[in-house]
Length: 356
Image 1 (cartoon, rainbow, N blue to C red):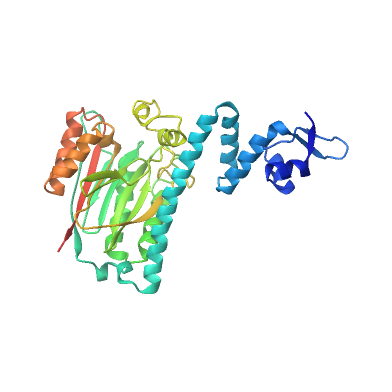
Image 2: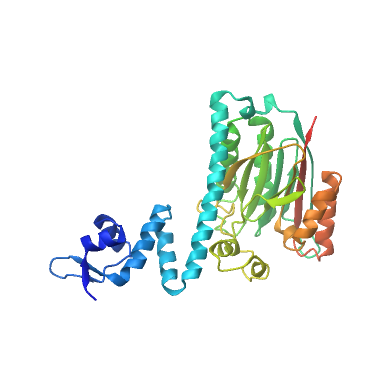
């Protein structure tokens, strides 16, 4: 098979010579041969499928490091590579939706749209709420913290020797925002609070202690969500229950990549391994932040993994649909976790959006 110059290969692959040189330096697309005298790069036609895949993945915006992984997988298992690309795009669409919410919020703020104003100009909705935790039947101490108030729902799941203190500190930092943060400052306030907790409360723990955190702060027209780890938020709307957070865990990343099914994840030996948490590490603490539109009749559930790992989704849906009050839902869900053996601490916070 004849060799192609870098110019000829660039035309065939729809990649520029400059891009080909960069991808060679990064180890992403090495030439078949480099002339030892003049340094010219030469390619072969067998490299075109990988090069064209690189071009398409760059066009959809995939990071270079991820492209290398997909291309390596493509050469041994093309269907698996397709699943990884699909999972990547699903994640992009989720993040785009979150950014769209933020843009809408900023436009409201800057244009004076009443829908974007703060709690001082609240709509005719308010939250009816309840929260509870239980040590469970196995763990010696309770490291979960749950809170429900007029503006804030929060659940944190601590781990390590200082886990109880970590989860308490995370929720306390957000409780302080209930009266001090309004309107456009909500998202900045949540981000700053999470950063302070991560840096200040268990510095030097080296990841041995920390907490997950999921919280929603009511702005008067929307709920601002902050999420780190594998505590979860669910929404009951129109009789349908959906999860509105994405677990930051190893098994969830494997599900996203198509290498693990949701059913397999429930028994995976590393199902509790977190990829993000408030553990003193800046690399691990990056929270998801988004705004969520609220309609009358919405019911929200925030919970720790001590609930959803032992209570099936059908039971969670049933309780959210049938419990008359948030306090009833909290009590029933915790009772179900205990009836299932209560192997972990369990925490729940439930709120209903009601008209006044």
